[in-house]
Image 1: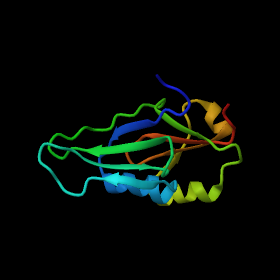
Image 2: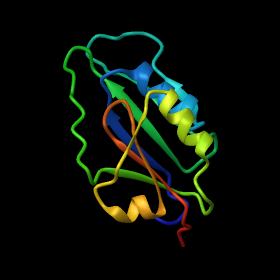
Image 3: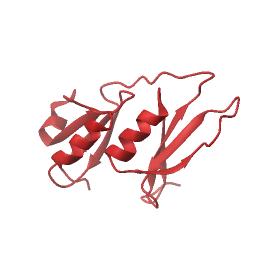
Length: 132
């Protein structure tokens, strides 16, 4: 059964785990929760990022033997509801860490926040509104 305390893992393929880690850790401020430490044939490399003790995290994967190309669409959004104006310094950090500020496909997100594309093309929306 699921509920508000259910833990969530969002797994995504990455072209470059170091670049993805830099964006999510140095840019957004998440922590590395776990990573593979050595290459094992037949297994994929991965790094998990999130907040220690949090209820969600990303599992970023790369299989050098059978790579999967990330294929995000304009509606593959990861939205963070900040409940405050988006900090310009945060956006600058995300860009410096390999992100790119982009216009949202849905103008709602431009009206209420900032959209940043990660190195694999996935979209992070920093929303000034609250949820719930």
